[in-house]
Every structure is written in structure tokens, then in C-alpha cells.
Length: 458
Ligand SMILES: Cc1cc2nc3c(=O)[nH]c(=O)nc-3n(C[C@H](O)[C@H](O)[C@H](O)COP(=O)(O)OP(=O)(O)OC[C@H]3O[C@@H](n4cnc5c(N)ncnc54)[C@H](O)[C@@H]3O)c2cc1C
Image (cartoon, rainbow, N blue to C red; front, side, top):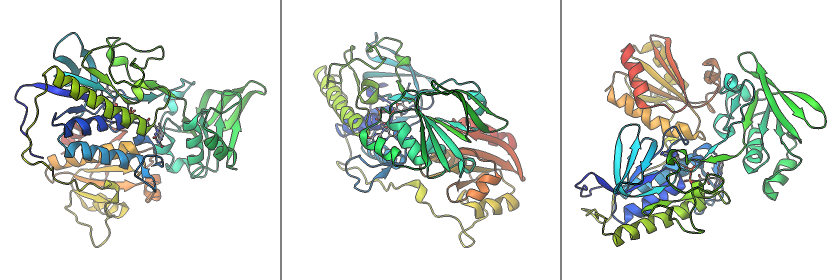
């Protein structure tokens, strides 16, 4: 959209975090002509888009009577924030100097000055630290059933989920779509999930609940084969599983604040009940990073709205806002839809020179016939990190201006080729040249990593 660019290098408002809280704050602040800068997050506190990028169907977000995929909901929020003039900055904030006016935020790439800040950094999934956790991480152990459940290695195998809350129950139920049986390993003798969720798990004949059970060790050779557990009544019990999924709670992403802003006993940002103001004037907080109790998409969005309105008022009161003058009152409509609805390439649509194609037909053809580097992303529609990575890879490929080709393989649809390629989680990215695998990555990485690897073989 056309806006008048702010003249100095001080932002009106920086929003940290791109979950429902951050994007909602951005939509409100952008519509108030503040042209906020939203730092999306990258590594330290979860992926851009936040926790809903790690779930499948969100059935309780208002406005979607048939449910909406979490990553799709976040794509829509992002598009709405951008449509009204939010600038996105892909990085992690590593510190804030709250003693300066304007505030100074440090990222890995440099520093940003801003008159006000909204912290919406959410919370991250906890790890357990069982023996061999690192060895089998992504080789059977995962913190995201929803992202990795469709992996071929888990199909028709016994799987386990650790935890006793809503996430654990949801993940156990979800995994019954893929595994032959799911063991739910619960530390105590009761579940902490909602009554409806408990009923759902208990009614599912493919789920076996193991009470009073703690996982000690993961075993296997190249892939997880069993877990050693200690049951307070039965002693040591070995359970044969090919997948172990953690669903053991979250830690608020407040470490980077370095205690410069008051936190509560659990490490969440301390705000007065129902208010977005933090202990520092001009800095506001929203979403799960302030909320250890409700922690829902819609509550995060609600507090994001409150934080933006409070920041707008505060900036006006202090006479600090530089209002952006729009050239048109109504920005252009977004044409956003899920990028996963792209057509699969077939015999008729295949093009040897195309920059981006989809599916195993295109992969096989390019593998044999192309003399250019080929970047393949193995993804699945419910995998949030795939939604983050795909546009990044497309940008990388565009920058090489036809010298590199990209292919997307949806592992749900192309299971055979995913199995042949040894894919054990999404997103996995493979770089080929002359039929040789040159490099492989798993998870979201910086664009520069892909560019460097391509440059080395071009
Ligand atoms: C598996 C699962 C299923 C769920 N299902 C539902 C559901 O069906 N319905 C529902 O309403 N809720 C659901 N939730 C809860 C919901 O996802 C959260 O309540 C909501 O996402 C919180 O939003 P948020 O914006 O506060 O934080 P988050 O979504 O956690 O987003 C935090 C953002 O901050 C960024 N960040 C962190 N640290 C930094 C930093 N240092 N610098 C820059 N950026 C940073 C992260 O990258 C991320 O973008 C689910 C959660 C999980 C885990």
C-alpha cells in the first residue's frame, strides 16, 4: 500500500512477536496510521506465526464455522497486518535498553529505535532432557506431533506422547490417525486436560494411558526403537515405540528482557490484571507472555488489541506519534489464500525451465533432466514451519534468476517419494545437483544458509 514514509529512524511502535497477539496489535496500530514495525521472531522463541503454526485445525477461533488450519489462520492475520501497512522484520530481539528514550532494541542484525513497544513473544514448548534426547531428536523424538505426525516412519507404528494436559491429549488423539497405537505417558495419576478432552482420549480405543510413568531413556540405533520408563508401581517398563512426542508445557519467552521489565513468579510479564501496561512506561505486553492461565489464540488476539490501543493513546498523550498519511484511504485487497492450494505439476503442466513446481512427477523429471541445482522442500499442509519456509525458499530461488529450480513435495500426498528420500520430519530441504544430494537441512533456516550452499555449487 502507498504510505508516506516516516522521516527519521525512530519507529512509533515496535511489536515483538508474530503470534495472534502480535499480528492483532499490528492490525490495530497500522489502521491507526502508526505504521508499526513487527519483529516476527525467528529462532529463539518459536517460529514466525507463533504456536498456532504447530497445530492442525483450530475449531474455536470465531469466524471460522468449519475450523481453520492454524498455519492458514496465521497466514491470514499476517496478510491483514501487512495490508494496512505493518512492516515486517524477520529477526529475534536479543535485548531492549529501557533506560533510553526512544527505547533501543537490539537484534542480531542491528538496532532499532522506537518510542513505544509491545511485547508479544508468547511461550515455548518445554523439553525433558531424557537420556539420548539429542541423539534421537528428529529421529523419533519430536515436540510437535502435528508437524511431524505424518512422517512415513510413524505410520502404522506404536507411538508415545508425554504429558497430561490439553496439548498431550490433543496430540495423542491426532497421532491415532497415523500410528497403530498411542501410549499416553502421564507422570501422575490424573489428566489435567479439560473434561471434554479427557472423554475424547478415554473413548479412543487406540490410546493406552500409562499412569505414574516417567520416561528415563530413549533407545535405538539410527531411529528410536523403545523408551525406558519408570512406573512408580511396576518399576522399570520398556515400551516399544517409533515416535516419542513431548507435550509438557511452556516457558514464557522473556529471557531476552534480562529482568529489565518486572516479571511474575513464573517468569511471565507482570501487568495489572486486565491491563497491557508493563512496569516500564511506553512498553506494553500481550498474549501468552503475560497469561499463564487462559493461553488461547482468541485471548492473545484480544490482549493484542488492548495493547495497541493503549500504545496509540500513550503516544498521542506524549505527543510522540508520527502519523502516516495514506495516499488512498482503503488499501488494496489481499489476494491471500493458502499457498498449499497450489496445483500439483503433471505431464501437461511440467516445464523443464520453471522456477517452482510441485509433486513427485516434477521432481523425477528435473532430477533426471535438469542441469541446474534443485532445491526440494518436503512439507505438509499442517506443518507451520513449512508455511514460514516456503516463501523464503521462493525468494531465494527468485534471487538466482532462473539458475536454480525449486520443488515442493507434500509428504501426505507423495508418501512413497518421501520414504525413498529418507524424510523423517517436515520441513526437510534437500539440495541436488547432477543427481547428487549436496546438502540437507531440517527446520526453518536463514535464507543466507540456502544461498551460500547454492552459490557453492553453481
Ligand atoms: C499444539 C497447540 C494447539 C493449540 N490450539 C489452539 C486452539 O485450537 N485454539 C486456540 O485458541 N489456541 C490454541 N493454542 C494456544 C495458542 O496457540 C496460543 O494461546 C497463542 O498462539 C498465543 O499467542 P501469542 O501471540 O501470545 O504467542 P505465540 O503464538 O506463542 O507467538 C509468539 C511469537 O513471538 C515470537 N518471539 C518469541 N521470542 C522472540 C524474540 N526474542 N524476538 C522476536 N520474536 C520473538 C515467536 O517467534 C512468535 O512469533 C494451541 C497451542 C498449541 C501449542
